[in-house]
Length: 560
Image (cartoon, rainbow, N blue to C red; front, side, top):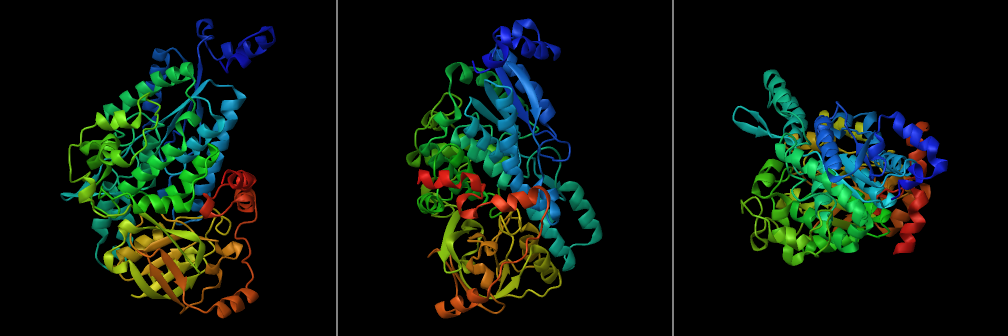
């Protein structure tokens, strides 16, 4: 066992003394050492239930014949970090989490890892670490929150609270309704209720084969989640004994499966950052083009929030990810999972309880999957849109550019009712380097939707979006403005042409005019010059390569 490096031999007497100092019995010394990375915190609803799940994981590890050691990993709630300086830290935290798991796992020579996670950047950070360290690992996602309820109507955080701000300012909601809404929207523990980033990544994790079947959708408050946590603890010891490491599961075929499930569910655009970053740690190259190719061949079969009407609890009661795999089986690869079962076995044993929530392929909500990748003279390296959350009338538009140098500047104009039908809001210098940290624009997109402009105003940015964003919102424009991408030279009044079916996004100016503008362009001064964010900005790469850090770029190129 790997842990023998810290516990066997005369020279390890001091190491054993320190281990016994923790209260560890001598009888446990020869068992596999299992590190349990937990992102418990009592400020994130998706994580407040982890103390309970830690107990069940611990019981499972002991039952399986291992010995657990718990260690903490930081977590950020994107909802609470939204709209202020805190959002700069969200995407960079993914890299910190991966580094921290690697650090603790290698420093203490764990034989295996259980990764207890839930929210937006924590799950991909944990998966990146698993692929990098490559000791047997299993992921337990804590699960979604129940829908909120108010006056007989179901509620979700994103669709009902962020968009409520615009409705309130338009006089569509009063003070008492707002006060009731903020108390009812989030009834307790769990990740936000729609197919937003946290739940999308949980579904992707299960589709990758890195968590047990049914883990992704089982509700945070359910006893089922506790049982999954227990069985994950048992299973990690078996994975150690059989030496089934993450890279045996995280294969090219597994990543194809994960993207197909993502497209079928209409998941968050943030997966276009996270899946390539995880794949890279496994030595696999996943391109933007791969997302678009798979999307064109994968029907959108689940009408989930924010673009649709169904909640994660609906998907759970309809059969969860195993039922989705059953629908998609003709298009999937028969890859291995941490359960020991292959994808086809899981699909064959699944029950599809509700065919409206998980439709047959020939009755899909959309012929194509959730995400489209656009290119053109405005985004030579690509841009990303959740096409299933765009109304038909907005799939092809031409609009007037309204240019802003930051999210804050854009919000001032949106809240002052200066944005009108036919405008294309352009928010730049919000990319990985320019932000820094590639902030989510949910405040802006939700305010546009809340003001009734969701079917007449587009928003484009080199930043990114929440999984809860809906409408014609195009992010990840690459190259970003800070690196001299064409978005940097857009001017107020320029006509922007967007054609999602043709995968095009262009600024309608001549090549000569574009060259003239670039000749006089100078990059904006960095917004933040100190601390972790300044270091992140110095090494962050393009959104088109997953916004990984620069010291890994050569590996990406080598793997192409």
